[in-house]
Image 1 (tube, rainbow, N blue to C red):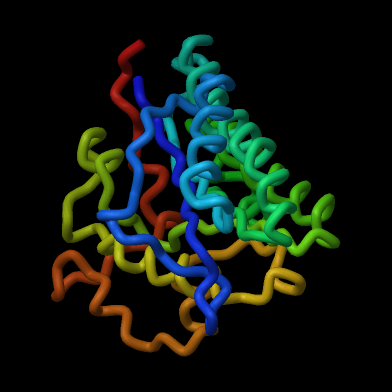
Image 2 (image 1 turned 135 degrees about the horizontal axis):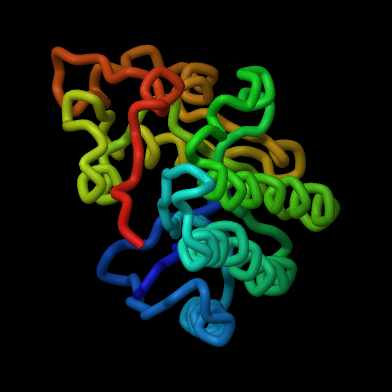
Length: 247
């Protein structure tokens, strides 16, 4: 299994904090984020290629939505190894290189904690193992934000308000395109986050749509997969989704 987390690197743009590399400049690196040696090699090769690491986006993920009794130990180990452990180790390796070039951005794709508490922990139901792994990513982000706030390294998390089209949703048959936003809403959110001040904008648990509204975005119909259907929020449909009961 090859599970990839993205390192986004390049020389700094004179007017921005970053510059997105082109596909032609990207280097493909086989990476299983469960493997510490592969993580070290990936980060090292990335740094050797460009001489700096400015951004780490932890987007690798494993999904298992099922009850506690229907969660085999190997599924629990898988999702936690990929999600919370993998993102932690990626950050651990990238941070020393970010400190060399006086800062960087780390972004974890994981849910905010407070809304789960406010809903009486209902989002945990039949997704306990998965949410342990994803909230572990959020806690990891908060720890990075506190430990490295004097190093010009910002850490934030991002989570969708509504389902976003992905292979995870397609492969698990979790709704259809009428129920999804395009991936553009995530990429637009990321680009705005990377423009934020690393010294002050850190430790935030962001929801894509809410964050973009604060950045002045008003038209969200452009993100719909089907122009005539506004997707439901995750909170409205999470109770309908279950992973196939396969070990």
